[in-house]
Image (cartoon, rainbow, N blue to C red; front, side):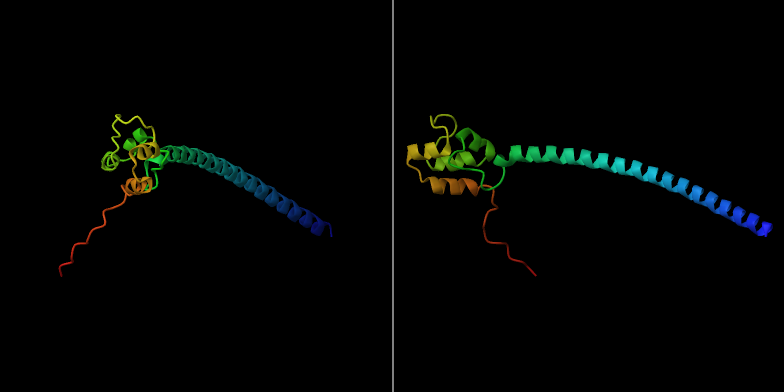
Length: 140
């Protein structure tokens, strides 16, 4: 009976030692996971800041790009910066946008010259589109 009791206590101590070792291993695993989590979080924050900076650049450049960039309120000087073909379109409506005109915006210049503002803006906003011409025939 005493021998069985001693064997039982030894088995219990062995089980406790195993559990303590397992708990220590789990703590080490948890610490490694926490370090990886922190590294990933820092990387994500850096990426987020880079994306925010990129979005700020896009917002700043947005008025220069895109087919709907020209409005009646667009300053003539800005229109010339937005597309190299803007000067030709403005000139075709009688607007000299090179500085000789005293008007500040596309709308003001169109009104002063009696130009059709909707047509002018339509032509300006189509500057970014690809030409619409017949496609080349496919030769078999």
